Amino acid sequence: MHLPHPPGTTPRPRARVVIAKPGLDGHDRGAKVIARALRDAGYEVIYTGLHQTPEQIVATVIAEDAPVLGLSVLSGAHLTIVERVTKLLAEQEAGDTRLLVGGIIPDNDASALRDMGVDAVFTPGADIAGIVAAVHRLSTEPALLESA
Image (cartoon, rainbow, N blue to C red; front, top):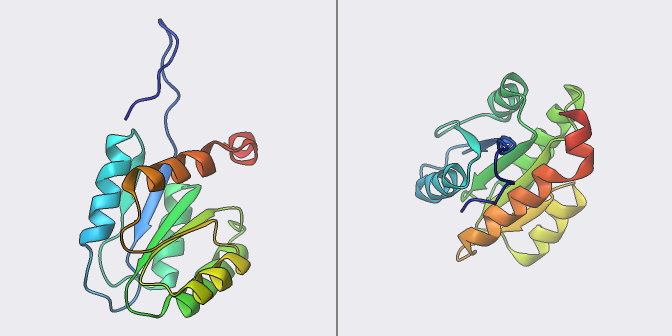
């Protein structure tokens, strides 16, 4: 998926996106599918691999200067993990990092995640193009462009 740009101009580079698998969850096929779709759409994707702690994830976001973080959580620990990640991001002065969460997430928990500052929640069966579109929207909002 490529966005057109005027002839003779170089397209603006897409944002860096960190895709992370926190905790003991060992299933990463979905995270890899999303990472590949984002790469195909022109994003620079940093996939952290399995079994990452919130501290490791936030350190990667900081080191890579990534304005977007996607967490894939299938273990049921999404509320605890997101609470810790958002706290660590704020402590590291990276509280403006846009956060997407995907996984096995009950509707009530999706609302709680949004209340915690999660920008988008995706559950099984979510449309990949919709996820890419959400990343595009979040990574091109004026607040991010001003700080880039």
